[in-house]
Image 1 (cartoon, rainbow, N blue to C red):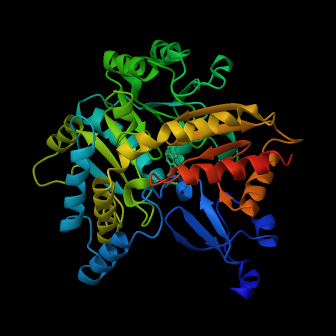
Image 2 (image 1 turned 90 degrees about the vertical axis):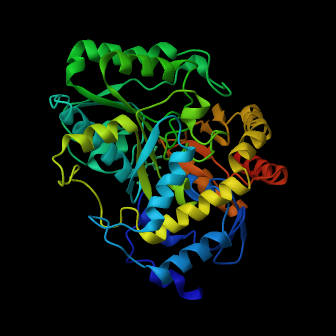
Image 3 (image 1 turned 60 degrees about the vertical axis):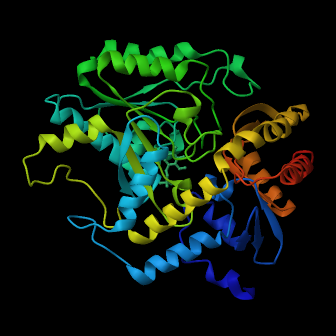
Amino acid sequence: MQDIANTLENQWMPFTANRDFKENPRLLARAEGMYYWDHHGRKIIDGAAGMFCVTAGHGRKEIAEATSRQLTELDYSPPFQFGHPAAFALSRRLSSILPGDINHVFFTNSGSEAVDSALKISLAYHRARGEGQRMRFVGRERAYHGVNFGGISVAGMVKNREAFGLGLPGVVHLRHTWLPEQRFSRGEPEVGAELADDLQRLVELHGAENIACCIVEPIAGSVGCIVPPKGYLKRLREICDRHGILLIFDEVITGFGRTGKAFAADSFEVLPDMITIAKGLTNGNVPMGAVAVRDHIYETIVDAAPEGSVELFHGYTYSGCPVASAAGLAALDIYDKEDLFARAARMSPSFLDMVFALRELSIVTDIRGYGLLAGFDLAPDKSPGMRGYEVLQRLFEAGMIAKLTGDVVLLSPPLIVEESHIDEMDGKLRKVLNSF
Ligand SMILES: Cc1ncc(COP(=O)(O)O)c(C=O)c1O
C-alpha cells in the first residue's frame, strides 16, 4: 500500500477529476457494516451506501459465500438459448416483491443497460402491436438514466450530454419537478403536481400515436433527491393510460427499500409498466441490472413472434450470469430476513430530522428528503461544483463519504443504519459545513 501513489497513472477513472485525484488519492482498502477503512487505516462512515447500492451494509458473508459456491459449481453459462437455475430463481424472487403484475425480468449488467433495454423494449412492444410508428421517447429535465446513448438522450443533466453529440432523435423532455416554493419540503412537496401536464402538452404537440414511452425516476436521485410533488406520478400515469404511452420508472436508486417500501412505485402507489433496477439488486457486490415488465408487455412481444423464433433480439454476454444471480439471491435473502425495507421506513424520521436540522447553517440553501435518501444544496463558490468538490474532500478527511453532484450533497446510508451512525454523520457534516 505504501507505493500505491506510483500505480495510479494507468486507470482512467470514471466521473473523476483524474489529475487531482492522482495527486491526492482517496483510496478505500476495506469495508464492513457501515464503515470503510482507507489505505492509511482510517475509519470512514459510509453515508452513501457506496454509491446508493450497498443496501445491507458492507462485507456481508452470506453474499461472499453464495458467490463463491456459485463460482465453484457453475462459473458461466451462455445466456442465449441456454439457462441456469440461479437466474430463474432470482427472477422468480424478484417477481414476488415487484409491484402489481410486473412479473417478467430481463437481466442486464448495470442501470445504464437496464435503461437502454427498457427503451428498446418499449419500441418492440409497440411494433408487436402494429404501432411501430411510436418511436418518440419522453424524458425529463435534470434526470439521470445512466451513461449509454439512450440513457443520456432521455436524461437531462447537461454535463453528461454536452460532449457526446446529438443523442437519439425524437426525444422530448418534461420540465423537472423542482419549484422554488418547494424549498425545504420534507417528503412529497405540496405544490407542483400540474407539472405532469407537460406530458399532455407533448402529446398535443407530437401526437400520442408517435410516443412510445415516458421514463422518469420516481425520485430524481443523482441530481439531488428531487421528490415528486404530491399527485404528480398519479397524474403522469393517467395521461399515459389515456394515450397508450408506456410509463417506465427508473428505480436504480429508489429500488430495494430506499423509500421505506420495496419500490418507490409502492411508496407512491403508482404502477408503472416497467421498472429498471440495479445497485441494491446484489447489494452492490456484483454488477447486475434488470428491466422488470408487466405481463402484457412480455406476452405481447413473445406472442407476436413466430413459434421457435427469438422474440427479442437483445441481450448481453453476462445477462443473468451465475455469480450475479447468486449475489442477487443472497442479497434478497438478507433484505427479507432482516426486514430491511421496513427498517428503512422506521429509521427515516431520525435520519430526516438530522438532515433537515442542517437548515440552520447558512451554507445550506435547500433540503429534500424521503425515506433514507436526502439531498441538500450548498451555496456555490466561484464556479459551480467547486464547493461541492471541496465538501467531498473535507468530509473524507473528517471520516465520512457522501455522494456529491455539483454543489448538492446526497446522503443514502445503508439500510442497517442506527441512531449512533446518524449522530456520527451529523457531527461530521456540521464540522465540515461550519468550516467554510
Ligand atoms: C436512476 C438511475 N438510472 C441509471 C443509473 C445508471 O446505473 P449504472 O451506473 O449502474 O449504469 C443510475 C446510476 O446512478 C441511476 O441513478
